[in-house]
Length: 65
Image 1 (cartoon, rainbow, N blue to C red):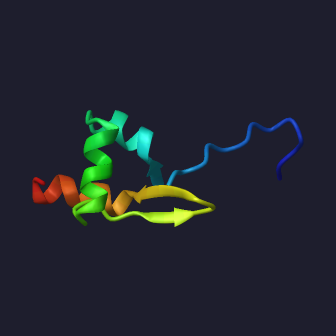
Image 2 (cartoon, rainbow, N blue to C red):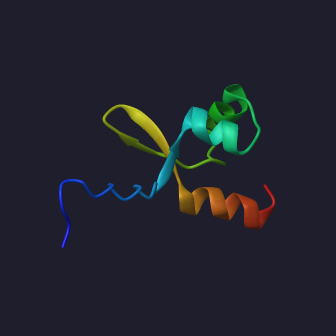
């Protein structure tokens, strides 16, 4: 049973904002936007913001893109 004094659990992120993806993958925003424009970096738009899903990031890592 939870009480108001319990710490909230951390939220599991399901994707990255562009700047967070760039920081995590040590690349520039210009490169990320170029990859999005040519289709190499799929993304979704939610409330006007671009997000790169965890699945996309993992696929890039496994494919060696």
